[in-house]
Length: 97
Picture 1: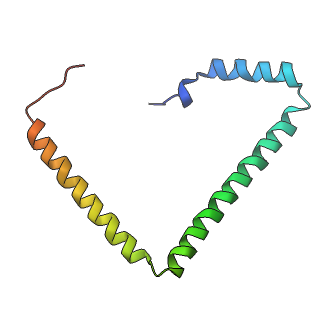
Picture 2: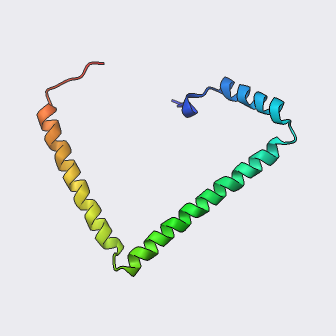
Picture 3: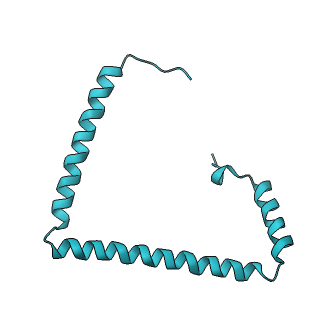
């Protein structure tokens, strides 16, 4: 089963492309797409820089991956425990939509 991208059908995408060609012209669309690609690349690079800075900062302060993994696994265990308790309480309740 194919899910629509953002609930936009192929006809609507074609209509949007047609409007873009009419407004900007066929010669400007590759230039616009190139600019969008460069912008997305800049955002991706900035995100990677932020991630590496956080990782480097965590290592400088003595936090290591094992500590964060342990904390994460403890949170997951608690969340699973709460889910289990909720399912036990609401087990016989059925929702009708």
